[in-house]
Length: 614
Image 1 (tube, rainbow, N blue to C red):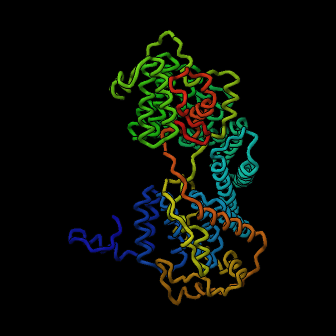
Image 2 (image 1 turned 30 degrees about the horizontal axis):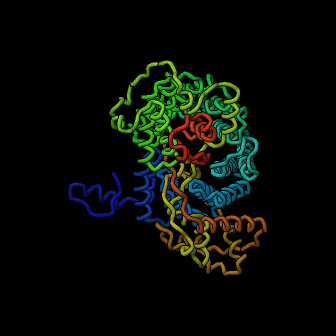
């Protein structure tokens, strides 16, 4: 049964009556039940219906706001999530619920992190930490430390996009950001050990491993991921176990331990199939194909790349399909089957044109021209791409190599030189830019502007809406917990916004949001006293305003720049695509390996390491 607002036919009039007569709390409890069962869409429908019915109970309404914000977060509707977490923060502060204020601040921080608003997210998460420490809430403190670590981890990944420095020779701001992430994760780990929370320890170990991986500390990363793996097995968490195996394989690749890496990737593949997760299955096949290529076991590499190709086609992942064709072409060249290599190079070229991948198109065009030159054929001699060979099951015959060494895309070896190259390129493969949502404007500083008197709409540009990455959004208030009268606290100082008010010499009443505008709030004599709390503004510290100015300056810079260009998403290709790194690095040296073509003046591939030359 779903909540309805309009009249229905006589056949279901009883259902309509039940919904109409249901109380706000009853609807909210059903929404909570559905969300716990994983039905966030249905859950939000009941929560929205509860808001429509309304309630005078401020704690109930605050809990509904929190749950609605989290539900919309998991649905990736981040604008709605920000809206309801903002309402929750406003209401929690109005009724003096300090714990609730901290949780709402943390939820705002998590949502802003996904939107790439890292400085604002850090302010919100720090607010959660400060309140948790003030209230002696160790669980909240641990969660806040974890969330701040996540903010700096995500910021470091974004800063590393396109970074060409060697591991250990990172720009100071990038290294500082990632080291701050490890610092917060270590504090979180220390606290959850004190609390005896093994599940939280597992998450901390995993994130420490990921951050050390970004820093190029692969030995440390392996140590933490092995601890993560142990706890995942302890809890029977197959998804976490799969992630640990994959992360271990990635780190071992950069240490040159390819055989051991294949063992972990095979376990990743096995668990992905058990979990019926086709995306992760495809990523595992891709990683195995690349690792067997590094081991010069090209036939096994082809088997896994064909499996990746089939899944990419089934999931309509054109970027992943193009990457599979590129990898297959390389493997066939290494086996001396140049006509089959040409077939896949042509498919790679067609897909790159289709998806607008300029770097991939340049690389594929170069490969096609080299193979055609070496085979002594031209375009008119070839049948349309796709009909010359079957994509599935085509097996090469190993033939004696001729003078084709010069047209190999590159030569692989498992010697020390390649290990150094892999290590040298560790950071260029790790991530994609975080996207922005048109609802960015409903962010933390829009909340501030609502408390103030001016808007910044005329300054903003509207950005594209790529999917953001998902993450934990803790801090939901259970409706059953909320019913305990002991949880209601006495009103306290509204520090965060009152500090801003006093600094600008404006009256509190002029700037405070009108609580009557909060959706679902019924103002009665019973709750009016809680909504008109007198406060005693305090002077802010210089540190607070330095942080605020820093956040505001970055916000203005974001508003002035042009929207970022979209990057094609390839769900079946892992972010840690070490194979494409080698291709980009070798692109600078390929002139030494090529035959001299008739058209020497043609443009070569774009060797910019920040590009995506699939």
